[in-house]
Length: 307
Image (cartoon, rainbow, N blue to C red; front, side, top):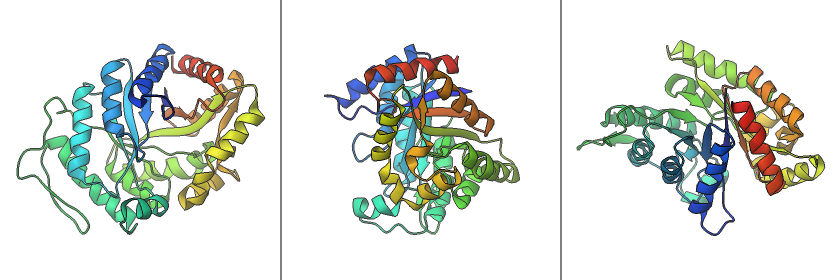
């Protein structure tokens, strides 16, 4: 099983330099992959491409780019460039986003997200695999009067979706290579998410999908303090219906209840629970929440689990 880490260096002097330093630490600890969230700040495919060039031991990925406010042609260019820069080690994650962020941020209505996701994936798959597209949907048009191939990225780009709801899981199983659920505990994975996306992939004649479970987590002895900090940081997700549902399906009341917190033995046991629930890859996020010493302690354990 691959074990990775989501990296964010938002409070250091130069975000790019600091992210590369964090990625080197992760690779030295034995981790296999590093993932980068898409915010209104740094462009995550560019960040992944830079890290992938600087730290060749890591697989790198984006988790995840919302489809609202983007177009398959531009996302394909970003993804293929990152794939060529990393010599095949880049993984592209897409997301529906939410009305909470889409409408005030981009000034566009958050309408028919599942239909948009489906059309986006169809057009993007054409572009990343062939360098051409001739797609005319209800919501999107993507055509290539000139080739859109990036030499060095001929192998395509793995496409994953931050899917957790039934409709998004169905589309992801049919059209994507895997999913990137966030805040989904073992119960939600085993009972709802993994069966749904796997059945959709089987029905579409596609290979078994990757299940990249992204979870907040840290190795620490001060569990109460870490839980309190996670409660504060993750409160935003408690305003987004899709996350509220997946937290409830995980048997939790608050987003922070899904976080994995404890000593090495406790955290290792929880990682195994995610594996048993169907996760093919486990990625820890917000590992710096309890301070530098515990962040390094967390990386050391995850590196051991990865090897």
